Length: 82
Image (cartoon, helix red, strand yellow):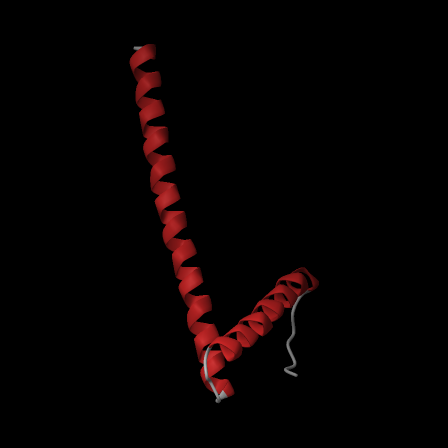
């Protein structure tokens, strides 16, 4: 047990993260012959970091796509207003 000071707004997110970590630990222990808990936790950390980075990349890609569509729409509006 680790003493954490969190706001009530963060509590649900922390509980969900805890559940995901517990599920990941079980999955790694079942699928791989990992004996050291520290190795399992490192694997979980790597997987979470990879997911965060992938979401960031996806968001950047989505932002570029939205920006391109807005520019095209702006160009159409400009052409029809002039």
